[in-house]
Length: 284
Image (cartoon, rainbow, N blue to C red):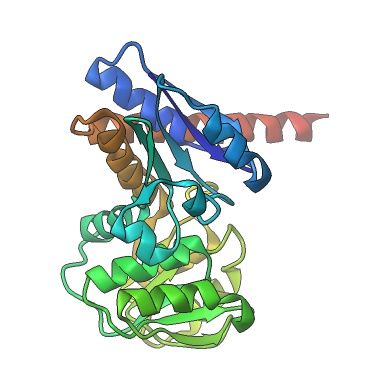
């Protein structure tokens, strides 16, 4: 059986390491998983080309929202958030799922979050921000705040909030704001201004999550750790959402520890390769 991760760009994805480790641990010798470069324009044709030998697909930027009209059915979480990061093929149908939400909940719980924080702040308004909103709703947060660069581009987030039955307040990106839980869903470097703000806060957040997993730590994560916040990295989200994808595609319990070890080993390999390249460059 075949599976793959789609996105643009996608070469950096850690998903192949995680899924292949799962297949090996489960003894699924005939299964393969690859990374395929694909944007919105090529998604429909690629889906059409997936025959009975395909188990499923993982989707990353910019495909999570674009895939919805191409599905036969989406699970309630994907419908509520307006995006699916997983396609499972079965009996000639395309089923869409959002495993980012349970992945976020599992990552936060694993870091010690036991009850709904009084205040929660999301950085960003994209597909991952919508998943963060749904995760917060699952945890009992009814009135989170989202820091956005352009309120006119937050329609998807506001629509997701309405479907989830929560109220989300919008504030300008970079505004000074105190919170108990901060979840950054923006790309690497985009949250650097909040790193400086964390250092100045009298009462830093109890927990800070940054969905970036490489390079790590981000400036936000480093500042949060120095301020005394519990820090949750994007690797934990990636691991737990991938574990749920494995379960959906294989029908077997995911070997989370084997996946964790493989993912961390791949990240260490990349760090070593980057350090070696930097050293070589300085020597020239």
